[in-house]
Amino acid sequence: MSRNAFRPPFDQLPATLPIFPLPNVVVMPGCQLPLNVFEPRYLNMVFDALGAERMIGIVQPEGEARSGKPQPLYRVGTAGRISLFQETEDGRLLIMLSGVCRFVTGEEIPSTRGYRRMMVDWNPFREDYQQTEVDAGLREELLQSLRDYFEHHRLEADWELLARLETWELLDRLVAGLPIAVAERQMLVETVSLKQRLRRLNALLQCESLPASSVISVRPQ
Image 1 (cartoon, helix red, strand yellow):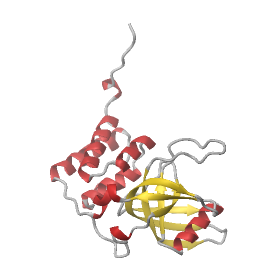
Image 2 (tube, rainbow, N blue to C red; image 1 turned 120 degrees about the vertical axis):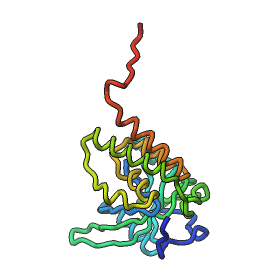
Image 3 (cartoon, rainbow, N blue to C red; image 1 turned 90 degrees about the vertical axis):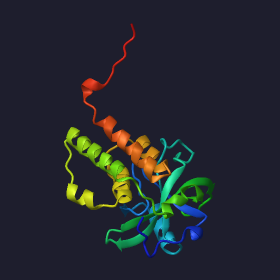
Image 4 (cartoon, one colour; image 1 turned 180 degrees about the vertical axis):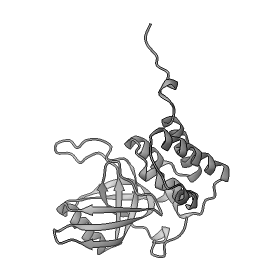
């Protein structure tokens, strides 16, 4: 993975993160996520982050919020570093998060600023800081599955641009951008190795490209 000059060293990642729960939204390491922030509690979060490590944890909610209880979250998310921000005249903040590293959430820390903060464990995802090579054959298989998927769903893509991306960037842009279910996206976020993530996404694309006639229906006799 290409290294951003402002990306903190792995052993200097913070022990806690402010958490921004977003349904069906992820940012993978090395990728970027633009956000439009307007709720007072999340404006607090951004300003606090700008005064500290500039980092925010993006985590998908796992279910609906219940009265009097915090909304349940998936245990794995990704930290993004605020690399750009702009104030608007109507009181919003437009920010760009650059993905840094995935983490496992731990104990929640009481907060007086409206947003949630949690202890985090980076160690399971140390590989996010390592250069990883993937066999060219696996990459080509993924691209073919992607072409079949786009044709099946009548989607368009800039294939020249996709062909120029490094394998990790191609894969993780797809993890964040494809129109897939929350649970499927989360499965890919939680898959540690690049190679295994590529295999799982490839299998998912192939499954989603099957014609309806190939789906087996079982009826009770």
